[in-house]
Length: 397
Ligand SMILES: *Cc1c(COP(=O)(O)O)cnc(C)c1O
Figure (tube, rainbow, N blue to C red):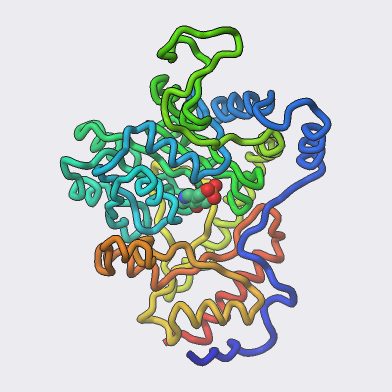
């Protein structure tokens, strides 16, 4: 395809702006250095401190931090009893890990379509996808807006399914006035650098269920226990431990935990700034009839992780790819979240094909993710708005 001409004049920005970037301050750096000078690099006091802090933040009773969000989803699926021959319902508009966690357990992901206005999984479509083999639902809080958890929980209770919330985007969001993290049966947060709070890598599963908590602890660390109550044999001595299930090494280091603890202190300001930027984008883009602004359900008080720019193709002379390239020419770097998971060749090889979820497929054709992160200046935000407006003005039908 030919590269589109720049929408006229000089670029909206002189220097490139990224679509996402972590924010690390001197307190964060000192917190990690302190761990490096301490006795514990892993399985130390920072792990317990972080788990307590995440419980305080969300109101969840238990937290199990992991090496990353994908590992956290894997042990959540295992704790839910997902296994060979089972089905797990999830959305196609997500990162592959939300579906891969079912494959890791020998189960089959089943894709339910999204709501065309909020872009989150549609509870009605979830209900239609349930079969006798369904074991769990993985609901993603896409862009940080909470999935509609109330109807999803109701459906899961009626059919004895476990509701796993992939909250990789959701930290800081409230659903019906309650912090996400203590509502679904299990909730995952990711601490990857593009997410609102980072540890370099890192993840957590939050739950209120003691039985799930005990399983999560086992799966995180090789299936090994030092708790006599969980053992099959009499302890041989004080050194004794047993492997009672097949688990993994999905532990987090104390360096990661210290960084996340320090970052969490800034969550209120991170959240406030992200809301300000989203409000500015929404105010500017809702004036342009060529664009569709993502709808919010009133139940979600959202700390947005991603800002989705959606074009209405009939009203513009360019397609999404050309819009993406025109923004790059303005020095605004974008991304696309997400390619429907079942488009990937690996999923094709498992028998999935295009046409499964029409709303998701249409969304994918029309979206870009604009820059959204704490450290963006007001001038950065204005330049992104200027670039988008300039392109829409230039290419409108
Ligand atoms: C980032 C992300 C994950 C995976 O988290 P990692 O910590 O990178 O393993 C899973 N699901 C969604 C929706 C994500 O955005």
